[in-house]
Image 1 (cartoon, each protein chain N blue to C red):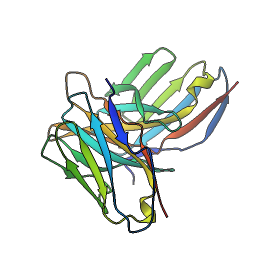
Image 2 (cartoon, chains in turn brown, orange):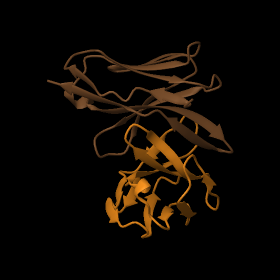
Image 3 (cartoon, each protein chain N blue to C red):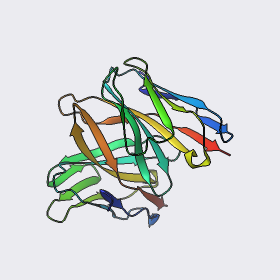
Image 4 (cartoon, chains in turn red, yellow):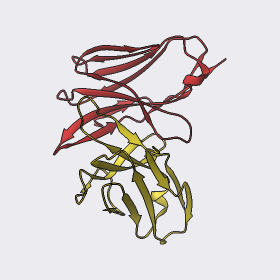
Length: 113
Length: 114
């Protein structure tokens, strides 16, 4: 079983829609949950992260963690064509003084006008 | 402040050829990483370097070697390229400083092995 599972999509939605992106993970000890956004032919950039359970909101984006079901979500409200990108969930782990990321496969999102 | 830079941007190799991918960061980070990204697979860690002078294997190290030349530079070498190494390679750097847990990625190198 992969440590982080993510449906690769693609997902196509009209402008203004609410988008829900999801991942599941296997290790209940994981505490830091990240969302990276990757535009076509670019490197990933950190969008937001949450620690442990609960929600975190940043503008139109909300990250949610449900540790009881090992489920992480990213919601995008009022989606825009500029949100078209691949969204990667990742788990942050710590070992020997450095941090290591375990990535999901990434979900490709297209928001059409 | 350029962040993380990678060279080259694109490369085509024949099977059996060798090459080195270069990465440099100007953020004074201790840790550096090499990932490969394949369709449907996400990013997989090849090698990492927790600090200058140390390197360790990641999830998919076979067929690769690395050198942490100094604090700024971390190179990835393919000694004898194979078609299975066709991929997009990303270098990243990070530091554990307060609440900053971000890994910063370079723009990537697109490698095709024929």
